Image 1 (cartoon, protein in one colour):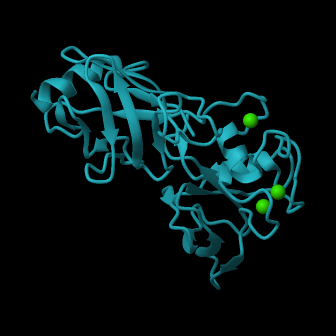
Image 2: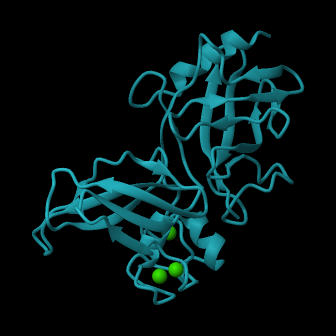
Length: 267
Ligand SMILES: [Ca+2]
Ligand SMILES: [Ca+2]
Ligand SMILES: [Ca+2]
């Protein structure tokens, strides 16, 4: 079976908002994907039911708990199943992944009955427009897989509480992917300075590789003052401290800054 027709056949059925659009529901640092994809020659392929037995990720040790996991860095691993073709493996050799900067998949997946399927064919490709935050059965604005990962249950964390008393609510810690049980881990500006003529400001903070960041600014301090994105382009975290220079444009004698964390391909 050729890779190209398979890729082409998949594309329309991954569309929900626009051509070449796919929604991947989220997700131990992995999260379960759910849903189906379709190929005219191979039929439906099930990616998982979105409800892994351990609440975090599919273990793929039994037919009752199979599916494809996303490690939140773009890598897809696990097993999918098609009634017509059997198991389809998302594994290390094929290195299937999503480029979280542009939503383009790459790599290969493998089925014993169909061989390798190319996810990044030059002519027919998939496009992931967004990644949903994932199942939230207790409706606290925190995906359940993230709660199980950090707390082991759905009761310890909630949208409004600040379990580790670090000033960031549990929901804010999810948005920044910081540890809700570690008061030393939260999104905050660690260092700030401005040069003598106030043309640039320098901000330093700790990043997570699973998040992107924008620096926001405003001229006034108060509940009615709105935040706007600085001219700095969104940047992807690297898991370490990052320092950026923000140009003071338009030039102002006073500015306030804050950081906003963004899930890649969030919606
Ligand atoms: Ca939840
Ligand atoms: Ca907290
Ligand atoms: Ca924390």
